[in-house]
Length: 92
Image (cartoon, rainbow, N blue to C red; front, top):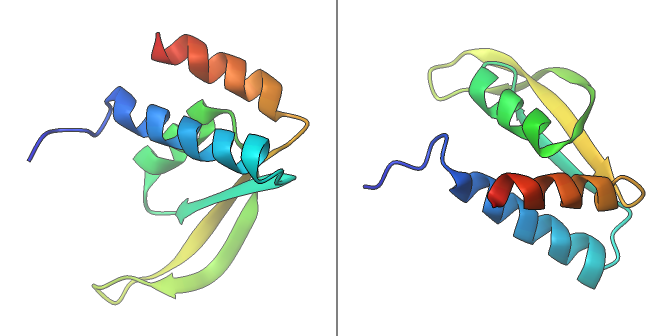
């Protein structure tokens, strides 16, 4: 299996999904969420330009039985042009 963690694949996929959401579907907000235990994922979402909206406490249970929080992020349609530009620069 190819290694994609830390590669540009995540950035490119998220870019395409957000471009479709904002430019084709005319969404006003794209929300992203991850486990509070997944620090690497939180950092990747923040590098996309998403803003941290908050934490939903005790929101889910992992396969190991650990109760954890969910960290919520979003990007709005007003923020999209700047986020889009920054992501395009990162993908070059």
